[in-house]
Amino acid sequence: AGGAHVPVLVIGTGYGGSVAALRLAEAGVDVHMVEMGMAWDTPGSDGKIFCNTLQPDRRSYWLRTRTKAPLNYFLGFPIDRDIPRYTGVLDAEEFAGITVYQGRGVGGGSLVNGGMAVTPKRENFGGILPSVDANEMYDVYYPRANAGLGAGLVDPAWFDSTACYQYGRVGRKQAQRSGFPFVFVPDVYDWDYMKQEASGTVPKSALAGEILYGNNYGKKSLQKTYLARAAATGRVTVSALHKVTSVAPAPGGGYTVVIDQIDTGGSVTATKTVTADRVFFAAGSVGTSKLLVRLKATGALPALNDEVGKGWGDNGNVMCGRANHLWDPTGSLQSSIPCCGIDNWAAGGAFAEVAPLPTGIETFASFYLSITKNPNRAAFSWDAATGTVVLNWQTAWKQPSIAMAKTIFDRINATEGTIYRTDLFGVYKIWGDHLTYHPLGGAVLNKATDNYGRLTAYPGLYVIDASLIPGNTTVNPFVTITALAERNIEKIIATDL
Ligand code: FAD
Image (cartoon, rainbow, N blue to C red; front, side, top):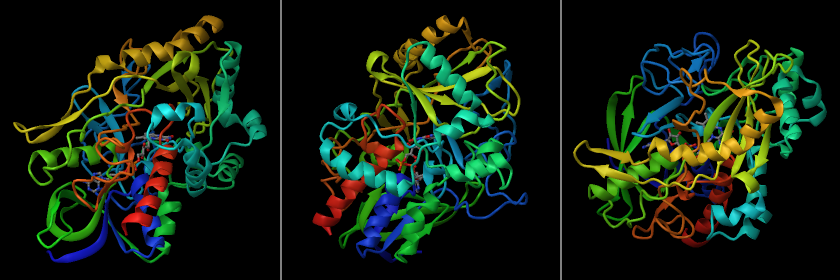
């Protein structure tokens, strides 16, 4: 195929891509979105679109023959299992020193994530995006993003009484007994729906342990928010199971975009060429960085600057569990949607989400995903020998994160007279330091791009996703990704179109 022409092509359908598509369409521009993952709009033989965390099937992982669960041991036993190779929803992408988890499908990370919609504290913003006007962000773009995403807080009275947040209440009690600020954090989950799940009147998702491999009912993923609104304009089309492999200047102006169509086994079934006046890179931190680094190195976009690929961080992610006393059970029914955290950012460089461990049985464990102020930054580069883009992150670079997380949990353990769990990440291994859920950077704002995401060497090429953010957001990142995209697309529509 070939010859097709579109005004705007968006690579990827996560937060950045969805904001760009909606706002451009509202401005009267036709947009074509290209997404390598599936559409996730059709139920399987069990009547569900997504599979359950406790029973992963082929829908769980992106082109793997064995699951790679983030929490891969339980009571010291490995829990991963064989699955058929399929274009499943969660990609556990392995680099030398880190496994980077990402969503695959129409909606990107919103399909697999916990929905925690956290706005950074304002005093921390200057350290997150130093070239961006904080007043504008907090007056206009964060509120716009939170409204567009449908973020809301758990009803505190319900939190205090429902069985499914006993683990949250234990987290609160222990945080407060050690003198740490405990905070509720917003989520895009439909809280009224969760209450109905608890009362047994609707099909369950949060209370059925659905997390990581998609959520069948209550979570307001992008499919239900930005992408639904974009579709309603009539100006946005989406091609699922299509992967962009090249973008290069077209002879007659604009850009030639090469796209592989793939089947659910990952095999290429067709290669298509489209000409686009403008291209938005919204393939996520890893996806956009890999594309730009390769296209620069292999001569398709040689004038991209030397900042491309740099400034990558893991948002300081590190996981751990604590063993509670028998009189502090965390509950056999746990909502898979986290709603609270422990804030020790200012004093210890750590913000810990009180995370669920929705196994269906009492574990007497408290589980946490900490976001820490890890200063280490990695870079993507082109490895000509293997023809791949590599990332130079090292596992040892997580040590600052562990030290920061310990500022919270060592103290809680001392207060409570408890110990760390050693059976969740291996045999006698306390820290989940091999992974991130929050890849950020690789095409940093005001470095690889101008201050609005333009790749200035190539008019009409833009970056509009997590790769703009240099490695850390102090909290969970997608509200900041969305708000920054809202800011940038408003400027681009006003000045470039
Ligand atoms: P993405 O959402 O990653 O979207 C990029 C899209 O581009 C993907 O759909 C991908 O398949 C597609 N793509 C990539 N390459 C190509 C290509 N070459 N051609 C076509 N398509 C391509 N954040 C929070 O704020 N709160 C949370 O509670 C939270 N929990 C998380 C839990 C998990 C398990 C994970 C994995 C992430 C979580 N995150 C959370 C992180 C959040 O989901 C990401 O930061 C966010 O999705 C990144 O947005 P993005 O727009 O940059 O890219």
